[in-house]
Image 1 (cartoon, rainbow, N blue to C red):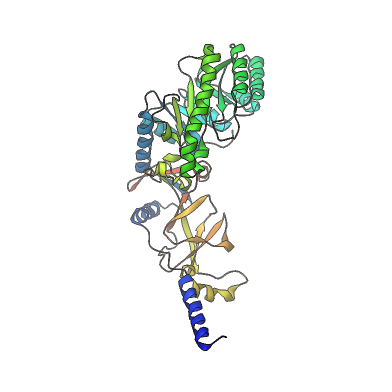
Image 2: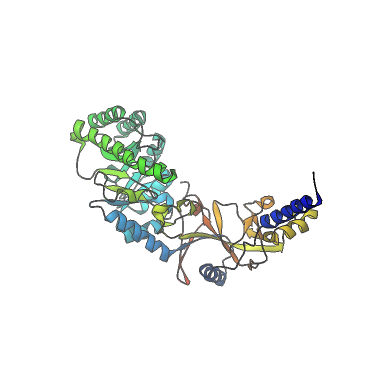
Length: 422
């Protein structure tokens, strides 16, 4: 039987539950770092979204990569260009890390880096249509020598046949690096039989093809729970070594100094510090450390790239189109809907970083004017900057034109990014 006492208890529980479920204030003022950055950008009258790179943080991240790769005897650091797609930024990293080795994933980037960096050693990071290779050789000129400085990535015997035909018809000598599947299962030679067949084609055509090494990418380790990654890592290394054994025992004529046995990536390069079977490790994104790279193995790396976008409007919050009557109720229930902040552009692959407590409003998701809910504690004003941290680097860094390089309390330079098309 429902008694008055039970009704009071039940009602009290509902009220208590509602009170506990009510959102707390998530807002606040700028952390000191972003407060200074906001003032710097405003003092320079920057009036549009920009991609800011903290050069002091970048320096420390470069040194962390160089120290790790340098701890293993005879290992070479290869810069992943797509992760820092700016020629001057690539140069800066290369000089500080003392390397000339690049990994490129886009044919227009390949052409630009070969033109601008004629002393570079370039490895393709993914297999390209043979038409891309044809375009490259047709348009390339300058001191960069593809026959000795460029490694095309080959993932199947069929693609190898296409490249061989191109080399014959164009009278080319092409270096080819074979992609091996060490567990990612995203393509590449997956068994020793197919690998041996490809190595035989290379061995039989020395006038047009030269073997330059293996590339084994292991990014799947990044997404695995810790215990599975620990179990998978020895298997990754064993697969790589099995392919090496085929090369050494069955095709010793292809062995020579200067072969590239590439592995790793930003989330995994530190796994190879004590290994000797690889001599070339790639990394790029960790230099910027976007949010997707907040992983234990990179815990000492610092976020170094931020989107800064001006505030265009600051309005009373929670006034949804066609649902204006709900506004007071929403603002009364959730203090984080007290304000609406509209930013210049938006809808990037990025997460809010500063000031804290901004959350995208579903009704105003826009690449033109992104709307954010905010509590009254968020003391950002019109013409101030909202800062977002990219979730990745390669696509985001290309969206803002010149990168803005900041060191301390100064803008040190503005550097153009690579052209997406040539």
